[in-house]
Image (cartoon, rainbow, N blue to C red; front, side, top):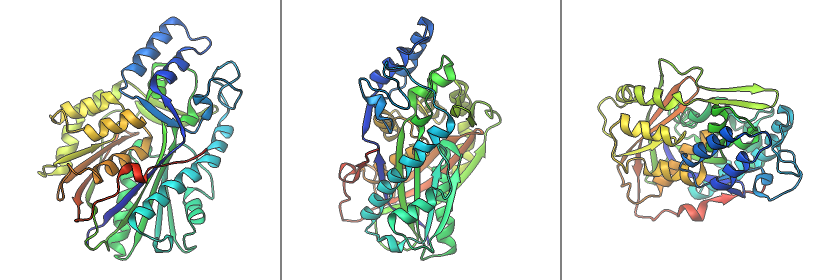
Length: 377
């Protein structure tokens, strides 16, 4: 029996920041010289992002004195412990909202969940996100729990792969996969081009999927197969380490070039002759999407869903590709039987791949707007 995603629920924090505003905020920081200001404006303007969500309400306010922004509008540099404490305070509720939306859309009671897989790389604590999902949703205390940490932007596919493996071993399993990332907790003032690039794209969000092999004729996305590949270089070009002033993201300008050069070989090996009808590619940034599009010789509309999610939400790390799959699940232009090739990129450089098949019924699915939830921080 093939495991199927029955539903995907999403949640974002209530604070929305426009790309123009956050660009000007970074460019106005003290000690930001004219060269750095030009680099900030050019990098933010090239990102093809219009808006992003953040748990930092301070970034959406004109003034105030908070943990991350002082009364003059200058960005503070809180220590890692304080940043992580905010993750512990804010991430569980965002996860709960996304997971509840997924359960509601699937018509599943919390008591039916047998396994929980949580995914995150922007905070850590124990008992962790997997424990909080069980407690906050009222799942059975015998629910099996697993957490995938620090895999980065590519982690949603390993999470779905684990769910598929559980369903293969236990055909009546119902698995809840929850990916939650609060990337904005790790922002910092910097003149480094790598850090400016990170600040121009990363955002906050959560997505959850309900997966089972006991789906019957219910609509969803069948999980056909998965693949993993390491590129020949890039170990130092995409990295995620813990520093004294938060988690330090390295995302160099070489990443799109490496992906563009190696994507064809990695995808050809994974597809093994299969010809997808649609693509769900993690938008690490506009240039990454451009390189994938040219490297795979895709048409100009092939990555539409990926570009739309990037435009409206930015890069929410591991949660982002689930936002894209949700959009495709509810997109009537993606027909029943369509094969969807999913790609995501993480530290290593690692390419995680998934092949999915869309299944529909005569029942019209709920719209994304009906199901999308915003959560107060």
